[in-house]
Image (cartoon, rainbow, N blue to C red; front, side, top):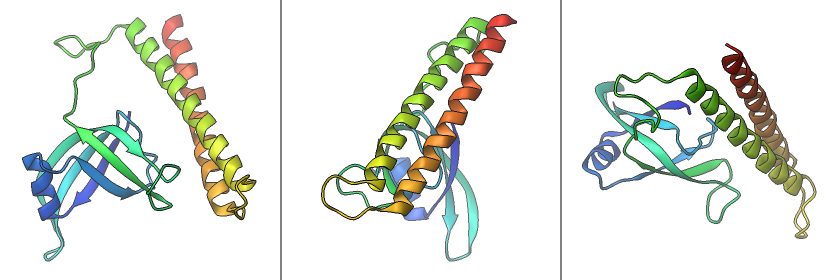
Length: 165
C-alpha cells in the first residue's frame, strides 16, 4: 500500500469533502493500486499555495487505459473512506506472523500486477487486432512489470526474514 499526495483545486476538494465526488481522473505516473491511500491537499491556483486542508481516501477501484474509455496514460480512481487494517489490534500492533502474511500478500499482488503488465506490454508490442504496434506503450508496461517484479521479490524476501526471526 502506498500513500499518494495529490494537489487538489478548491472546488474539487470541496466536492470530495462533502462526499459528492468519489473519484479522481489522474495521469498514471504513480502506479496507483487498489488499497493505496490518496492524500488530497487543497491547493489554491490563484495564490499558488496549499491551504493546509487535507482529506484522505482509500482507492477502491482503478480503471486504466487498458479498459474502455480511459485516455492513454491516465486512470480513473474510485475511492472511499480509509479503512483500518483488519488485523490491527486496538493499539495498532501486528504480530510477526501477521506482518509476514501481509508481506506474502503484497508479493502475490505485485506478481499479479507484473503478469498483467507483461500481458498488456505484449499486446502493444504485437497487436492481434490489426492495429499498429505501439512501442512506447509496450515499453511503459514492460517497465511497470519490472517494477512490480522487483516489489514482489522484496516482499517475498521480507516475509522470509520475518518468519525466521
